[in-house]
Length: 103
Length: 240
Image (cartoon, rainbow over all chains, first blue to last red; front, top):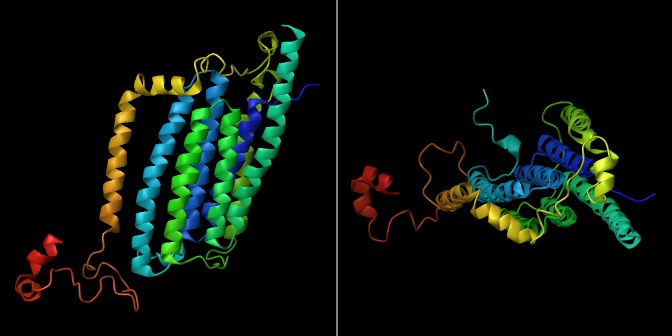
């Protein structure tokens, strides 16, 4: 009996990481931690892309993953600038404090 | 296939198995503890562990270039940016886990488990068969039924970096250029957002107590320009 890792295990791990990130976004109230959870979700999608790249035997998935990393870097730059601005306005990083539009 | 090569294949399969079990457990554990950490700085440190674990998984998935990129960009740049903002804002202290909506946490976990079940059932199950193991010998893979994993041995024949680079600068050169524009725009956006400016009247619904957005003596004008600005307030407001 040889030990082998079917590609589905990687996909399952990526799905689990995605769900953990999603639950984190739903239950945490600190904006920065919510943002980290979004990064975790992006990473799990990258893991899926790289796994499918290996399954199909071409490198397109890896290039796609590279683009996702680039977009994530841009997103973090702008998102953290927004969070700093929000902190200047509200003096808090709690997502529930941002309720100016609540009826 | 010679017995020696078959042995080598089996050994690499076993090595991948143990790497996957250990690093996968590390990735899952660090992700869960990141969500559960009360202190945001500890959460950021758990995120670093998770990024490193995913980089190792990339390496076992024959994506060496992405493994290095992951460490440089995520663990190197993005997490440092997170920690920088955390230190800047000084909100490292623990925050309570109280719920604003009743039953929010239970509902979130249940919905998450439902999504996990759907993902496992649809995306994962076709690739659990014997042929979906990526370092099978060729004849075994051809004999296997169901979805098979091709493996990247051919595509990576001249090296992973060369393969990815060729794709990036031939088929994907247009998205690559668009991405560079996106990065420039993001840098500009961060500069515009990060600029300290006088609070436009009425935009913030509660002025920050005790912390003026702009130091008093600065006032958004050059020294000595104050009286002139008072005469033409609209022009001064537009110029900022």
